[in-house]
Image (cartoon, rainbow, N blue to C red; front, side, top):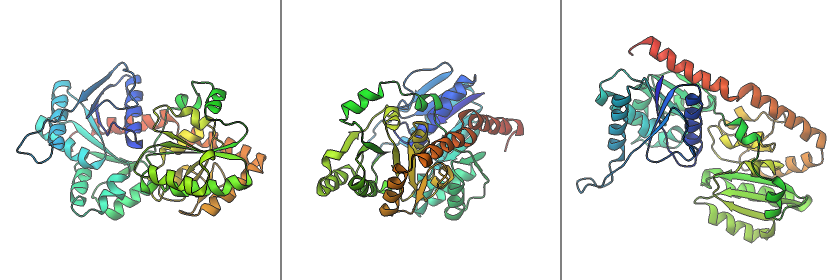
Length: 377
């Protein structure tokens, strides 16, 4: 098949999944065309069967803002026509599904469109009355729609109420990449001045929804009872507030601000625990990454995270904002090596049974083929 993929190329779960999916499809012999504003950040080396078409936006005096959506639609249309694409896969309903629908109309071809919902387009933008009709339109004009969690499907039905079936296809990560660190872990620890401390980590884009202050307060309570350090990896609007809170609590020497990193596998592998205490999270891709690295995850029971973490089996779930609960679980687990061992065994099992790459990629392949075999909508 000839498949076009449009996603946000910057750091974020949707871009990661879209890029990894494209790479896996290319490895399976399909011709994959990424149509994006820049090179996807996980596409760090070119692969056979992969092509990248960058969207260049020009400024014109007639437009108050650069017309990215129109330019993207035109570029997708050009790629559809030139390469005779069978499928275009749009990650996010707005603007990508809208652009995809327009592009197919412009190209005047029977190319099928799949849209994957990742969360923000529903749980944030879906509450904007000026955008809800566009989101609904994009979903309903798609030949097939998938979502990354059952929770997101339910949110979509409640908030958008589209007249369209939505199929559940979970996220996945590159097992080989996150299972095997490429650098000496002892050197990593030494560079961070870590010796025998318990290592707790968090990776995010430091938006308010991630509730990084809860991560810090949880660690603050743990470090009183257990010798530990906190790794905060990433960058974003709440970073300054996080640094201010760390200083106010007097734990600067125990917290390492790592900043934005393209390669983070080794941080998972030196971590004993990984915290994701978001207010909303349609899936929580970093939970899979952390589990492959062997870190026990403590997450909130919000959104799709409870589909990734089964409480007291392959990780821990706590209520949003309950830092006492989170810190107590960490302290108790540190004192119970047998339970930690059992959780880690269960982590491996659920990764194999529920989030393995090949079965998930085959689901997308089957979806594409089903649309092509069905004929015109």
